[in-house]
Length: 146
Image 1 (cartoon, rainbow, N blue to C red):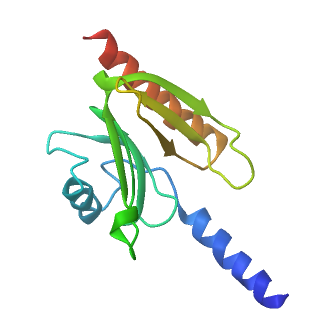
Image 2: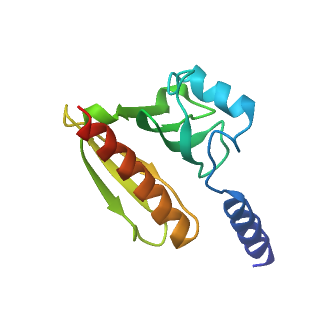
């Protein structure tokens, strides 16, 4: 029972360290890593970034050009998931605030080719709302300029 308690404390400590960041608060190595995944161009700015684990394994973010999500399996690269959509490709974004006890809130992004992917974020309610609203605002702004 005591081991279970210790594991729970460590788990929640790791989760609570995760916060929403942006291009200015992310480390340069994180930015370069995201570029290596082909999810960020030199002239692109990350407005909101969240990782459920560590930035080298998981990332969910939106920029001035796209919304993206990645999961890199450190043991089996066949299970890697790297997904993104430029704002012009997105036809719908659903926001799910109450995803259940075991899941973070997320946006369900639907592209014009009918593919769908999730972009997860967690934190305080105000932070989640700001992340969602920021992404939706960028999408709407880019869609209206087409």
